[in-house]
Length: 320
Ligand code: NAD
Image (cartoon, rainbow, N blue to C red):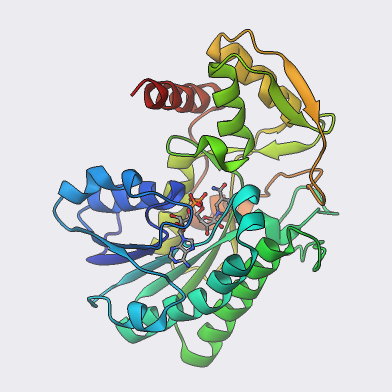
């Protein structure tokens, strides 16, 4: 992580998968953390260990509630806006809430940053590129999103949030940054959230068939959560406005991922092919040149190491 430290950070969505890792890392660096989460898709268990640490406070509140956001104990010098259902299973179940947190939630978090004079980082996503017609995806690509497809609630929510952040910077001079995060994996993902890594790991550990969508030839570039957190904090510590892509550089097919997980778990599971979701992107690989050149960031945890750590965590969680 960069040497930069903050006095006090607000992390919306801090009880989620990525948010809880961010909260822990900030506390490690001596930053006080207020974690705001409505637990729509996160869980208190993700931050339970942090509650005994000095400088951490969990507030159960909705980022779309302006009074709750205004009423937080102030003095933030960093606002990380990570609140948003992120897995397809979640945002398809919560379509309106997903649009609300990208619009009203982002607006409230931006206002909080403006009032406190804090640096603001929006967690955006590779999904703003939709089913990309350019490969790999660099930050100058505008994307290929179906605005009325089922996934649009997430993609367009983030695209609108990016527009809002940009307008806030222009109108109010808010010190903003946008990070476009590509698929991230690691401990504290939920097995039922529909994302490939936790689904395959849970299936492999249970000896069940791994359910691969379509023929599994669609690609993903996965990044281990510690590397994603490094990238987010490097961007926060910089003066860059972004958007900046943060993601893994090894592109593999979903079928290859399933085979690797079977191998690393030592499972006897087989592969079962299931229907591919509507508008599921065919290819995904970030161009991370900007992050390398401007932030000095690149992923450090390789596939085998990251998957082994993740599998170990899931195995321990299942045994607990
Ligand atoms: P997650 O679902 O585990 O975490 C999201 C958190 O936000 C949850 O704790 C949820 O309860 C909370 N939340 C949702 N709506 C809220 C609201 N209105 N008010 C307060 N809290 C609310 O998802 P994640 O994978 O940790 O993703 C975190 C952020 O990173 C999201 O903004 C997501 O879009 C972005 N992102 C994640 C990935 C990834 O691969 N994990 C990739 C791209 C972008």
